Image: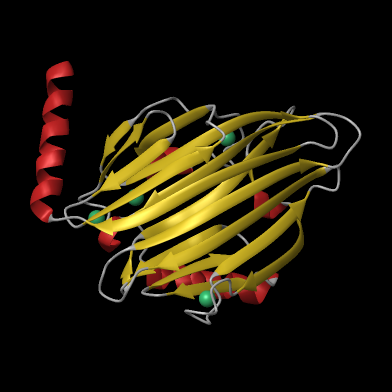
Length: 265
Ligand SMILES: [Ca+2]
Ligand SMILES: [Ca+2]
Ligand SMILES: [Ca+2]
Ligand SMILES: [Ca+2]
């Protein structure tokens, strides 16, 4: 079991007081999404149900010995906005830009679209832009790390990577699907959050191992290996959707997939 959300919130409050970390809460329809400037997104609630433990972005420049959270870069600016005021006047989008002061800029843009109250549906679109403002090429690996605990618990979840660019996670009540619209990831990994969360800040280079199935406290990551020529930009575009799933269908699907894996083992 992991720390519950109450402890996480208390920790973030302390960090806020100590390091001037900002917290932004987006709201739309039946949903809210919360972000802090130290780690990234730490909450996604749909009809009051918490589904997300963490989503964080990491990078490793050529020559670095480990991956670092993009929040270790200098923040250029951050702004939340209302992109659908005609239907819901609350803030639903967050734009944050970072720089390493050596020509690399990383810009993240999240847009939350909640469903109607009681529907259990919600989606977030994400665009990450990496830009080289220097006069020489920059090579780096960029990582998205995400740990959903669907329905607020991690005990009944399983997940898979399909076709190298779609991550799916299920329990008996909910499903989350993330599609990397563009560009195709260089690598992926579906596994236990204990394993994946140790990749970052562990003092060594880690690359994702291509595992595509896990049952338990599921987490996943995508990796992009990039060389940005002078003046170039690299845009990563992703969509995430949470939907409720009829228990019978989810259980049948899980049973069928697990049966297949047993025969192969
Ligand atoms: Ca709005
Ligand atoms: Ca669950
Ligand atoms: Ca590492
Ligand atoms: Ca999890």
